[in-house]
Image 1: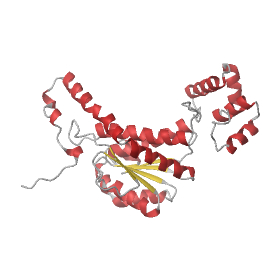
Image 2 (image 1 turned 135 degrees about the vertical axis):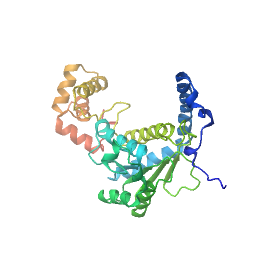
Image 3 (image 1 turned 120 degrees about the vertical axis):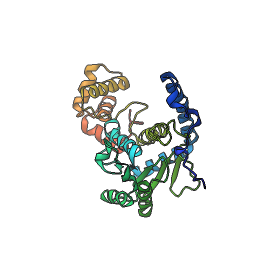
Image 4 (image 1 turned 90 degrees about the vertical axis):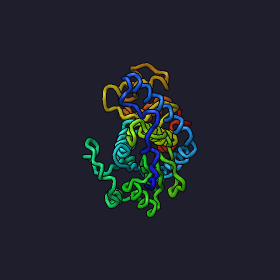
Amino acid sequence: MEKTQLPITEELNPRSKDLDTLSTGDIVKVMLEEDKNVVKAVSREKENIARAVELIVERLSKGGRLIFIGAGTSGRLGVMEAAECPPTFGTPSGKVCGIIAGGKKALWRSIEGAEDSKSEAKKALKKLNLGRNDVVVGIAASSTTPFVQAGLSYASKLGSATVLITSNPVSCCVYDVCISLVVGPEVIAGSTRMKAGTATKMVLNILTTASMVKLGKTYGNFMVEVQPNSKKLRNRAKKIVMQILGVDSKKAARLLRDSGWNVKIALVMGKRNVGYKEAKRLLAKNNGFLRGLI
């Protein structure tokens, strides 16, 4: 009988072949040992990850958007990453988007068959009026998910930049950047929510964080675009102003109130000893970057 070549993520892992006979402690040990491969796999792709960041920065600087597309675990990871960008980096609604096969209901309930629909991927991207300045990041552990492949193909035809994140080797990359996170067979064969999912989450964190840093969304490692919509985040904003300007809590609170709780404007006002309008003008003139202003 002819053998079918399985993707690495579908192969049996010899180190966990007797998983159901192990003690609880040994199951944990096996999983932790396997997870050591995650950082190694991500590190091997650091050059491609950096290329993807530069591509994202280039397109977003021109007014484009960052769009993640995936199915199952991959789709959920993309949606989650997109959701974290507005509160962390102050990105406008829709600047970073996530598309999951099966739509919103697939976020909390598995709809595995949705990954096979090529037309749904195209339909979802059409709704966003995809353009040349956009970047579409396809997430597919197997690299062959029809929903993701169709989305990336459609994006390429429109001139959008394309990035593929997968956990299987890619012999010929037909997209702008391919990030191949070869973590090996999963502890439970085919369960790519495990090592593949962890590696993917690491890369998504790097892509968004590094891109936003290059777009001026941080000052050093301070979260200066934080949206202070809760008590915790208002306290964080106040501490940022206190630490950067070296002022007390009272002065920081006053600057934030006068700036409409815009941390960047508050910092320019305090450092330059100017009012709200002038601080806003200076910041706009510097393309939103604090470096060089304070």
